[in-house]
Length: 224
Image 1 (cartoon, rainbow, N blue to C red):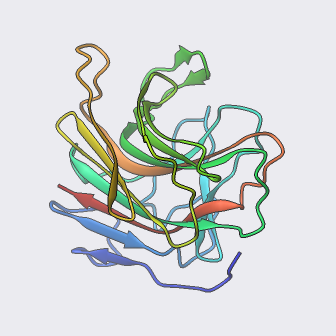
Image 2: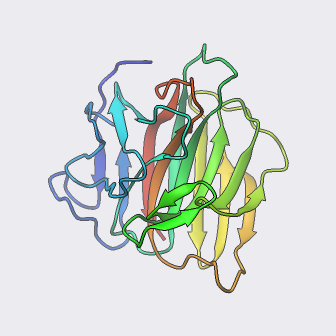
């Protein structure tokens, strides 16, 4: 893991303001080591059934111990229901192929709802997630702890510096790797559509994996 310190930038707001305005763009390179990830209270994590994110040496990671579906996550309010997340991947060069690790982009995320039971355990969170395996075994879109909606047809093996981007406009969800389209899906389910929420990031590891092997070195959130 590199241990460089890098500044983050907030636009159009000043760095001291915890709120995000209309047509906002928020960029961070995780300048400060934090557990949980906060950056002045901007990043939010409320669901006690899940785990928070943290930042170490300029990279954001999860805090799972592995072996449970308590994905780590953090999100930010103030971007409206249509938004985009772009993240630069960091992968430890000698990370073993097993156990599995993944990075996640979260769209229309909320974690303040009523606790609900799912096949993957209890949670208060809802939202769409785009999950990318650290060995490129899959890149999938799904509803959190629910149905898989779309899967990239071509496998993409991540490397440090790769850019993962996803956006939601209306019920259309798109994803790119290094500006190459990989997912384009419209959620047409009349009952399970997610119509409101916030942009965020997340992480997952299987039991035995290190949470600091696969993370994000930079993240940009944009209102559309």
